Image 1 (spheres, rainbow, N blue to C red):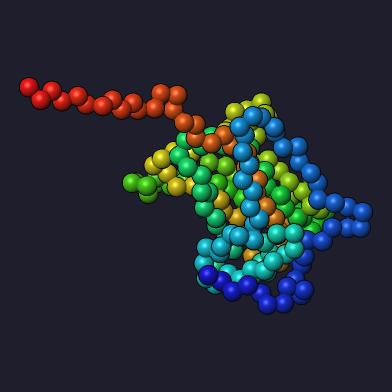
Image 2 (image 1 turned 45 degrees about the horizontal axis):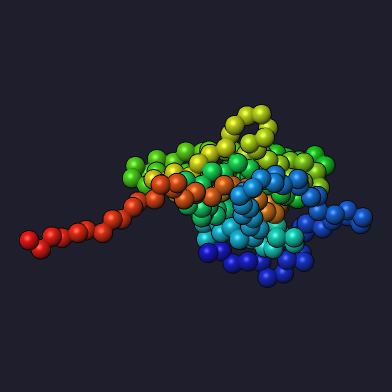
Length: 195
């Protein structure tokens, strides 16, 4: 794992301007819907050369400028059968004119074949503290997905090299958990006739 920067005060930080607050999102409210949210700071670098720091507000910062791609990953620990209906990415954009080089993706890899596919990919680039839906069941297009047993799932953040103009801060997911079967297996006692 890469070492965190020891003096983050020297690096760009996600700081809200006076009078500004973190925007609240309208989380969908349905009976049985559950939420899973985690800060981007919990992501780990894909390569040990990549350094990172706490950019404030849970944001993941990195000014690494070496030859290795600046990629961070985090697995998605939901069980097979879970229906994911919303994925929201919160981030902080330093520039009013973003370079659109920061991307967040959701991958899955098949356990037996090793085949990997991108489920969703989004470039980030609204100014200030912002957020974007990667998956939104209510957007008129059903791009929700169900976790399958034969796959492992993970998020990936790709930053441009050098000082990024965007720092990813958190990911929120809304999902319906695996439901218990309406007809569980039944067990009947065995009667043995001694005759």
